[in-house]
Figure 1: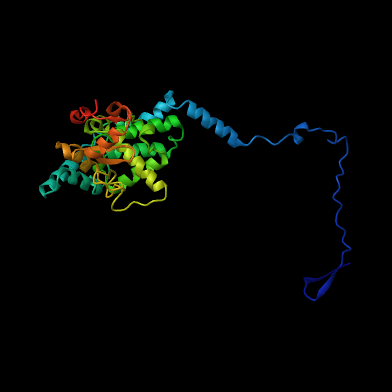
Figure 2: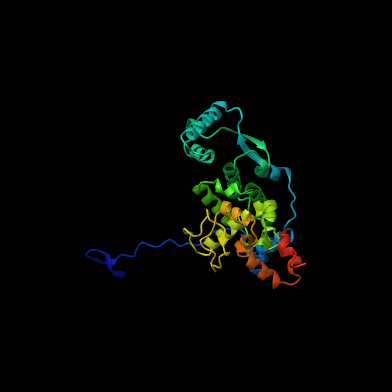
Length: 328
């Protein structure tokens, strides 16, 4: 008999006459009592992280070596391009742009308005074809959408994939208008892509050798330099900082030329290019790709004077003859 006061109201005794069935293996025959399992006592398996670490090492060893099969090429270069036969949409877009310009808008403003208020209430139809995204006839916004889709599908996980994505972004961001023509939401998407794809914030890692350059160098490498500024801002937010009126995706280039230690407020790409285009010697500006901003002629002269091999040091790419004459 078992006494359990809490078992049931007004009852403290449980009749245990009902026998619990004997759970005994009643099998006949030889059974499996003689089976041996030597693997049961083996040491624990190697953690998967070791394998992943080895893959990372291999990935690093193979960085820069791009071997693409047909399937990979299809994934990378099969893109959607505007359908030229969507004539009704094209005609409506042209009509709206002409209308907005007649109302006093610039062409760029009219284009932005059309992006928001879409012709016929939709995007232009697209067709799928094999084409390098960065070299296609897509708009900058459409190219970035295609690259964002690649990243979302996990095509920026290895070093080779990230290198290809970086090249596409650099080609897409070539020129002083590539960034300035993007809407705020498009700039935010670009920043998120840079963070996801781990776009470098270091000029050497991104593929630029010199640290101090002039307008001529920017003209030949604007895509990579613009991408570097995006990478520096993405790193700024990755460290827990938040964009503000002095530094954001619109104003990416810090201005150290006025001896401001922070380089803030920053400038946009168009304003930066105008500064690089100055012709008066005392007002000339150059890019410091380490800090990510503009420096003055006086600041550049001081940096060159304190460097070994002076202007011939590979960290400088300056074509200004007035400066190169000072440092033969």
